[in-house]
Image (cartoon, rainbow, N blue to C red):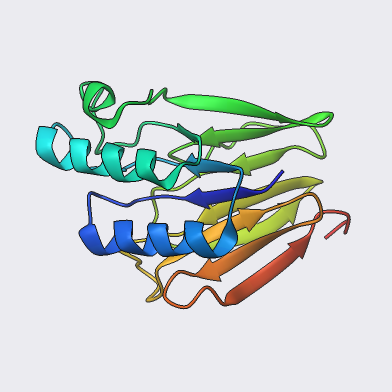
Length: 172
């Protein structure tokens, strides 16, 4: 299974184009959005985002960010729970918009957005990922992440080049 993980689109047309480019390049099985897909309650904006993502032909799961509203769900065409867990073998990917500081089982994954700054590391056996922002990066490079059965990679959304790779089987 291959996942493309993105966050903090904030309704950006350019960010949506970068997402389309990333999906075309990566060919993921599932999109994971870590919140702030829109600026909230803008029917036309959310509808365009929802239609574009539907056109990509890749299933999506998403969490609600601080700039998303429950009303956006009807325009986007998919749910925006505050958090979700995705089973991966004997482990789970825990997704939320803001970083969670609770303890997770070793081997699990914690994915979050909100900061617009990419980060990828292991801490006490738990892999933590913030893909940065695909539209409004605070660290200068729009980005997303790709996860498969062996690794997670942070990717420059401009040219799909790898920024950082973390082997899932490495203890670090």
